[in-house]
Image 1: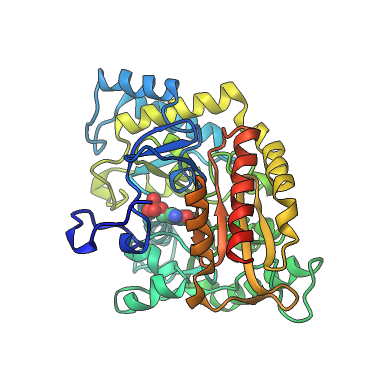
Image 2 (image 1 turned 120 degrees about the vertical axis):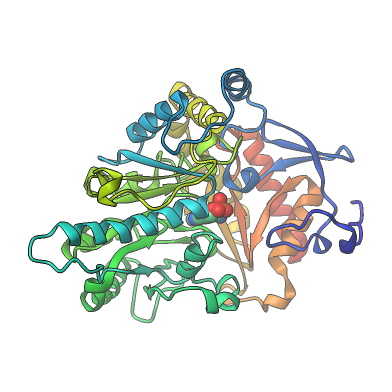
Amino acid sequence: SVPAPPESQSFHWHGFTQMADFQNIVIERAEGCWLTTTSGKRLFDGVASLWCNVHGHRNPKMDAAIRTQLDRVSHITTLGMSADITDQLAERLAEVTPGDLKHVFFSSDGSSAVEAALKMALQYWHLKKQTTPNSSPTSTTKTRYLALSSAYHGDTTGAVSLGGIKYFHQLFAPIVFTPVRGPLPCSYRLPDGVHSDNACDYYANEIESLLKQHHAELAAVVMEPLVQGAAGMITHPTGLLARIRELCDQYNVLLIVDEVATGFGRTGRMFACDHEGVTPDILCMGKGITGGYLPMAATIARPAVFEAFLGKSSERKQFYHGHTFGGNPLAAAAAVASLDLFRDTNLTDTIDAKSQFLRECLAPIANHTHVGDMRGRGLMVGIELVADRESKTPFDSDQLIGRKVCERATELGAWIRPLGDVIVLMPPLVASNEELRFLAETVTQAIEEVLA
Ligand code: PMP
């Protein structure tokens, strides 16, 4: 590997990582599931370029759709006007999202999609209060949110406020709000006396007691469904999402589901909510929406939410939020092409079999003395490395075990990233069995060598 240049000479300030800690990897080309560095090394894209590249790189149909749109219009404002391709995309998203989710608000990244959802929920309760007979026209009291422990919803201020991962959160305490904090519904480390068959009830009861106490001040419950990705692929007990949906109805609180990571086939259904037949009031999506080709995100709401905002601007009902690049036509063309590919290749229906194949290839390493848990849904896999498997004791974080495993995997030809000591595998959904086997064998070798 080529040593990294001194960090002080870098013009490019990288998010989260300090490049000086890593090998010097600069990509100049990509094709299918493979990245090629400027020094000619080929790397399997084991995290689908941060969970986005659903169809792999340089898919000819995706490339052609973007080129065609480039010859029509590449950017307009969508404040007060529309692009035909963007309207088409909104309709297609309404078709593929759960239940009666219908009205799409576009933004440019997952954090902003969450931010829009928070403001939508707050303004919704405000507008509802205004139109309820005999209620005072003052602002709603429903201005808080319930978020789960170790939640991650992005890096803008509202999203950080919801976040429960210490390092992303604590430094910024002076500029964030405090949500009502729910439990971390973790299936691996269960509280004393809780077993896998009563875990769903246990966590649902915890959330219900918070709703009982706080419902009058809560605008919404906000959660990642089924798997909390950045928390370390924390996998919720089956059925919990459906229980939370029922509780939100019972306590008159909106449900905002953040499918930025889980959306677009990743878990084996188009959206993770589909596993439990849940329709949230508002759903946030990003990452895979354009197949990883262009930045775009969206927040989709049910008619009951959208209709509260109907009326002339003079009635002051319009949503007070809007982005310069929201609904960008080039990104919209990529997103429509991606949905066409999903439809034409039945991609989502292939994920359960691929997931099973990947897990079979990983089965030998699952028994390693330092592999505590292998979890996730579909092609969203987390391998937690622990100091002691029996007691589930983590490694000392200063040992940087997860990072060392990923660095070794990179040397061996697969680019993967750790979340602490959880090794994350999120390959492009189009990865072949041969490629999934390569990924599994590379990770296995890296874990065996680092933890020999
Ligand atoms: N929500 C979830 C669940 C995410 O995983 C992420 C990104 N990892 C975000 C929101 C933020 O998305 P972005 O980085 O595009 O702002």
